[in-house]
Length: 338
Image 1 (cartoon, rainbow, N blue to C red):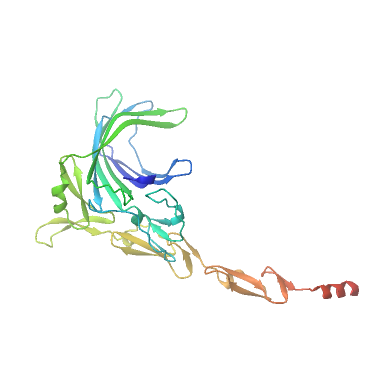
Image 2: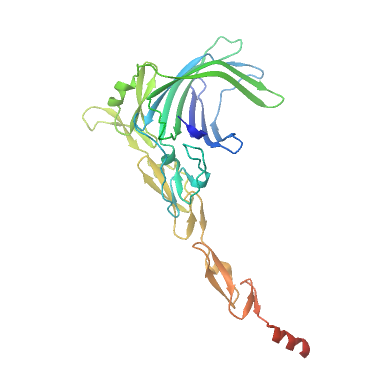
């Protein structure tokens, strides 16, 4: 499934009774040299208020994960994209930090790897769950929509369309002295039975959408970067999935000195002329006027993006300050003249 521990997990949690929502984004970066799994997490949103000292109970539940990309039977091993100067997709990183999904060996390259290209396998799940406060016989509903993006080894692909996760014996405890929330549970992952609502549902979901199992039924959801739009173009009202223009909506992270370029299902950032970077971070290119070189120095381009002041022949210094060079003979003459 996810060899090497390199995958992304996003969970969108909604509490309909209180109107609270929270989004959890996790990036699992693989095992380090000590076999410790490294992870970065980002949490945004708000949670319902719970009285101090109250314990939370979550009954046993099941989740069904449906593979949406690529179609079952197709491999989704990692691919690399060439690096373009000053141009990047919103989720990209240098290959030196990427772990090979098959053998967990680091790769060394100066190529830019797109997460979308590396983690091409996608599984989604939507669950309707409840929690209870200890001693209060009231069910508090909440929904969890999850997306897992991962890369698989082409020599051992995950040739299944649905996977069932059974979760039991949930334990949640807050340690006030240490300000730590402790979780424990018993999990079991099994292949789903032959009953798969999406066997029929996939043919009914339109372009740029995928089928998602919901209990004994299914629903169609838009792919990442697309949104539902009601259309009557075919004479019958229906919902279609259209591209989200992140550049128009402002839902992008391009630098203020970069251009946002809309792409189907995504976007890219490109630094404007006079600036250099990956598009999400752009720095102004130095000019010779910025360096303030000495009159007896010249401005020299030492790399593609770096300039430097260098003293002219017959002068010495750092380029900002230059003095005439003095040879041994001249120094001997000066000492005796003095």
